[in-house]
Length: 162
Image: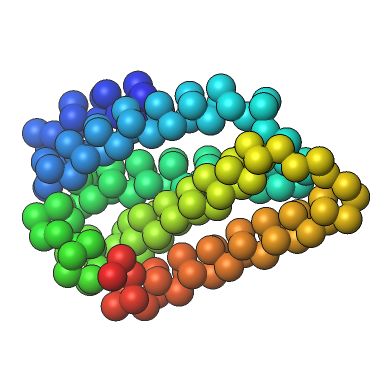
């Protein structure tokens, strides 16, 4: 991700919104640092295996979706208007790419689940079988709820990023 973030501005002469590629550059480099920090602390987390897998999946989906979404914003020209502030669909794109970009940006909220689960894992509870089931169930429910919210915000942009 860091290398892709560093290479994103190369496309800038052809991009419709150069500021979007600058955002993709910055996000790629910073999120790579988030990946490195999570990789460093991951073995130290005391989470049940399912919760750890959910945290890993949500981290990968959220960070990659966020970077690819901002890259699409730069390529398709959405950076000309601040779509996050305007609570509207991505202005530079139409049709499928509009929805795809908006979905990618909305999926970035899954990072919150990874961070919450990392905090729970750092608290270092002694996991009993009953607690493992509860934490796994809560993790799975929160993951599904965040996915539903992402899809809802994609197809109802008036509720997105507002």
